[in-house]
Image (cartoon, rainbow, N blue to C red; front, side, top):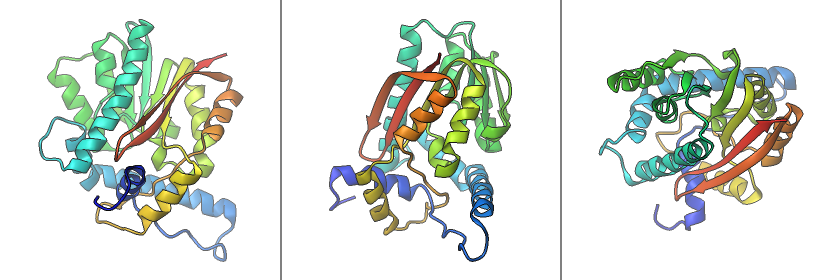
Length: 263
């Protein structure tokens, strides 16, 4: 995107991948009702998007397809860097074989499949049928039998697992629901939670607003930045302590990664 400094580009990318729908006016509904309706609207938008046009776009990004533009290729590289950082942590700890992993918002299996190849027992879910079916197809194509893929929103995931992962999903989550989301992820974990999110800082917030001024055809879901302190506080309240952290930033992708252990 010619004419923008490099630090502007990640924000423009985040906003170009998501729509910003006008909020419901305060004069129509109360704040609690508005939050509830907003959450439902977000889920509906995300589900519909990733079952249709979004699936076609992101399936190409999260693959080796040549049918991607420079922006999409950059996002692919950024997302892959985050995945590789997680796998490096897991490998360094020899912490996969025979352990149970719950991957919430698994997409096409970018993390779940490599973990399964390392011998982990995988339960992976996504709100999109199309994404789940593609992840299952990819796993089956390479003979993976120790991974289960199913359709579910994050709040409906149940069970207990050694490690719970949620990578690049929080950008679709309303700010006021972030603490509840983190708390639920922690309730599923016996040991470790790995979560990534787009961090909210004053300059990212400013640049996000700039990005909103340049709407494009791919704007189909809301995008949310999250204050790191809110995420850390939610982890702490749930009885988890951050042990490792990383930041991935390319021209069109930025993601804060936290690994928290149960205290």
